[in-house]
Image (cartoon, rainbow, N blue to C red; front, side, top):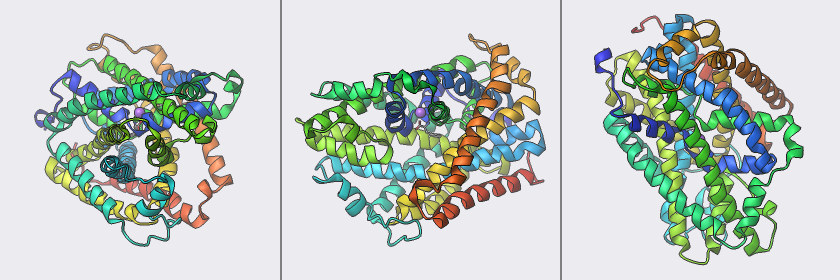
Length: 491
Ligand code: PHE
Ligand code: NA
């Protein structure tokens, strides 16, 4: 089996695919607002602290682990002990849950690419988005009808993913990354240059980066930094384990990982300049303060940006095109990595061909996405996203670090990646993975769980949050235990 395993064709291909996974919606619409809300430039301190103490150490752990086992997450954890196979399945199932709704957002972006040509979001993007576009019912229980344009875009986005992944690691994912990443970087650069040269943009950038050091002692800021670092580096999804399992034997895992982590941070900061430059312009054009227009996530991309684009002095269509194409491409390179984590595990465990595995995952993922393209879709998606962030990546990452530190031997991973790497991991890395990160993350998790029980998320009805949050979390865990306890496994 070992001989047949897919392999990356070049170091550049692997690095670009890893950056492709890391650079996503989080860099474009999450980081800048988080910084803005959390002390501006002062947020860079907790952010870099979290990156160095938890993000990069865990990234190298996941990469080193996959490089050592040369298998996807479930089989990798099975090599630790059959008892822990479920941890691998857990991360894979979380990846699957995420990709189901992540692809719905890519589908919206794709539709907005086409709307750019005519500024089809109308003069009032807010009523357009919730009204005509989503027909949002306001409740996860009130699905109403399917929104057919989104349904069709959903099919299209799954098909694009399908063809990339069915093409294999080298001829599919690597090739796509070599097109996607340069394309994304150049489009973002154009957006940023436009963004920072508009009148009023400096006020926006100031809001994003002016440091407010008085905030730095707030606990919440540090917790946000850890959450953001895990999310932005795609940790806790089995992705980096799978991607590194395709590396040739003598690869420089450590340097590749560090390059990817810094590239991700640079993308986030540069994208933030563009985003806040444009928000600053919009604020000035409307005669309001930056605070009144600053937002993130879905509201930023599908409401605030269309509003700003409407106000642009020259060729707003072109700007819209670049922006929504960037979102689409950034999203696609991340969704491919999420799906590959699942596909790789199916191939390793059920002796399925790649084509069969991708077909199964795509059909199931598409079907599960259908409720999210109905009129209640936005609520389901939002609740999913919230729970996944807490009980997905942070929890899985935490458990991964503990299992590999205490039920396995970090030295095995270290001694396997050091010889072929320029940079070395040593005692500091081990201390970070064994003690520092788990303590910090564990503490953050505790805080999150407490606040989860004290307030119902996002103003939804309790029943909605139980159904699409807690029940989903429980089902994912049960499925992971079931898959991890199967006897008919291939080693
Ligand atoms: N890292 C991606 C981002 O920053 C998000 C993501 C997480 C993508 C996990 C894939 C898997 O947007
Ligand atoms: Na990212």
